[in-house]
Length: 267
Image 1 (tube, rainbow, N blue to C red):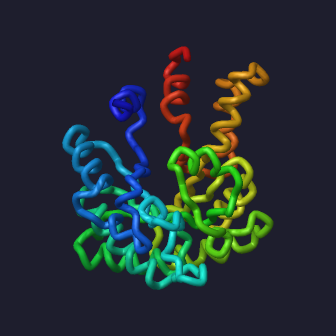
Image 2 (cartoon, rainbow, N blue to C red):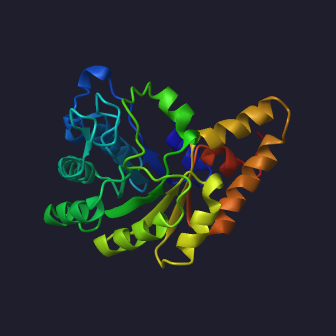
């Protein structure tokens, strides 16, 4: 099991992203808050086997939506913000009930952090943290992840994810998430947005997370396979750059490999 391997080299935090059968996907993504769904079952299993494991979850409807979007899509293609937030609150509570330590709304709907904080508190989960995807850009670096999930994305996600050309909006999102009760602020992708990480670090006292996404990971892996770069050195340099920019937490597919490198193990 990957979790056991990770813990052996000092990695004790994981993030869960589900891939559910198409038969369970609906326009409103109701499977997202099924107490017996894939994510709650996985949380309970992992907590039973690894009691000290810190589990982060993804709060968004895209894995459960027949439209492939983070939000509920109206017939004319418009994302329905408030209706989506209602679903996200139920999803976050279901994950907390299963034992999640940190819920991570990645949907970029307006007002969702405050609504989720209220729902968690009302359900008795005041101790569960929120890591908000504060600056999530409509990036082309997500391709390998979407391919792995067989994402059937209908339409565009630019209406709720941020324009890569817009750096000023990040600070607006920071202030909103802080005021609504976020505990951690996340920037996604990582390396192409180092300046955004630094900008938020300089303007917020909250912990900053950076997500080194699938496209970043795949390019380094491909370069290593083609012998164009030293994969291990570039991997470690890329993580160092994220840390230098101001990231306190790094989400990366390199976690196990990097931890082994830091422990002195060979690839």
